Length: 414
Ligand code: AMP
Ligand code: MG
Image 1 (spheres, rainbow, N blue to C red):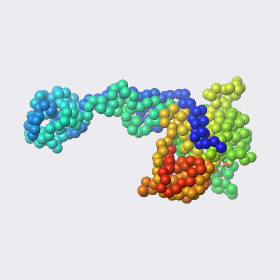
Image 2: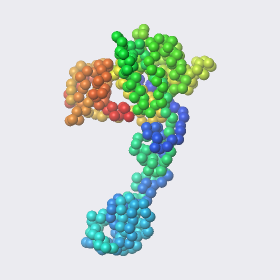
Image 3: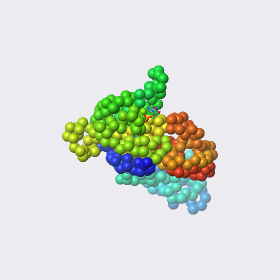
Image 4: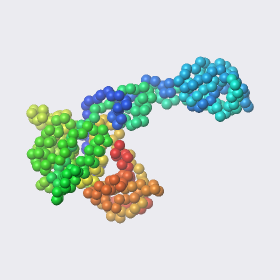
């Protein structure tokens, strides 16, 4: 059996960012991946600004100690250009307004007393007090968002703060997905004896959508070799990745393996993890290269293939741990690994498993972890109840109080 880390390293070693970029409006770029650095064309803030409502003054004009009374020589609301501060005067100023040339501090209005066109300054400010210096956040010419950044709402805000109306992003990763299993029925249809609902279609479609993929869903493909091969051939043409679910065990009803072998190449991995275990990784030839039939067809003549196990928790977990980083690598993302936390186990699991377990757990009110009582790979309830997965190494029993590696769903589902 293959260790989880080894399987992931092999997958990521094969992934290359897809070709194709586009320029899109910043307002529509949420969750897309930058294909080029964003460099700021300006300083932010673009001028010295006041961080308070108050009075801009020149410190040298104030008495060394005690109060100073100064005439108010101008009023500067935000968005209005000031004139230079006349020596021996104060300028009424508001938050976000430009500090006038010649002023070196702002005194907040709570430390002043205004009377007519005069103001009494009751405080001796430090140089630069309540002034946000030009460029304090961003310097003109600096890279504010490197290529490979997945654009969060705050990253879009940052790009907008330097005036970027368009962003260069990689095109979306195109994923074809289908499901195998003659027992599968869609919700809305009657459940015949022996049938179950195709829950994985909903989970996997949602997971792919969260990654910003362009999805083609071929639905349920009959457990037949010909049907599986035909779908693979069609899916290979216009996609970067074909993802299937079910049928990758070695039972005689499992036709995905021989179908991919006939249409491309396949490695079957028995990964030492629980839930999960079987994972298929390979590629399906595209028609053009099939015609020229080169044994060493270039990577671009193929579409990647990943076959997930059918058990609902297994397909969920293997997607999060393997497909997610693989798709993010295709998308050109810089960061594909989730960040894990070290949290206290508030339970004991005395039986060690020889496989790497990914246990569904929830953060309790004291910041420790509770375990879902049924960790079966068929029990989807655990994935909704939980906040994430405990990554428990092989052959390791867990004692209450010890620290465990916890990967929150918030890291895995973004
Ligand atoms: P398989 O990997 O095809 O051997 O399937 C393993 C188990 O997962 C079987 O109990 C299947 O009925 C179940 N299963 C397979 N595909 C799905 C699906 N799309 N939704 C829900 N359960 C599934
Ligand atoms: Mg099956």
